[in-house]
Length: 239
Image 1 (cartoon, one colour):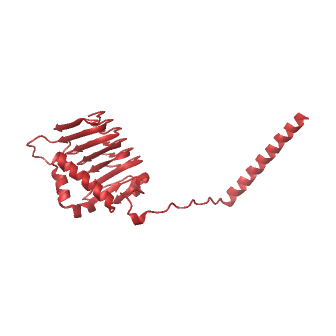
Image 2 (tube, helix red, strand yellow):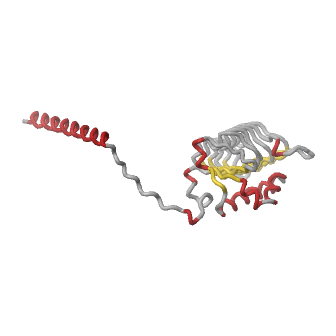
């Protein structure tokens, strides 16, 4: 599925290697376990590392776990997975990823855009210190509708037992989701309730300390004297 384009839809029975969906700009990729499988999909790996690297569009539905760095530099693809290794959503700039299984550490590292929905029934999500303030519980109707629609599509495409169980117990399950949204997304209707929309804070004036103020005055005086000497020399050279 690397460099997949609009109108091309791939469906795989069985597991995939690394770089699934690398650079894809459209189309869809669906991966499901082989028929007759008896294992739990959300406890087993179905795709490798660095999937969706640099993807700009399309959709991906994987009925199982993925390796590390899923969605690295994702710039517009939407995906539903059932767990991942470390560094989920690393350097994302756009798009959306839903993870409904256990994930690793360092979620959303360097993420500047897009959204991550993370199902965390065990309260085990651990974010890097720089990203802790970018995780929110889902309260906005737009986010709830968005997530619900993505999970319904995941069930439609993969018949996922995990996603079915979440949808069948939606009122309770919703409270176990986190929405990881960088600053660029935090004024959107998926993060903030309408009544919480805030007016931009006025700029805070810079109040210099007395020591800094004195230093600035001295530098200004030096610059002024230097300019006076330059002008004087220029005048004398003309005469």
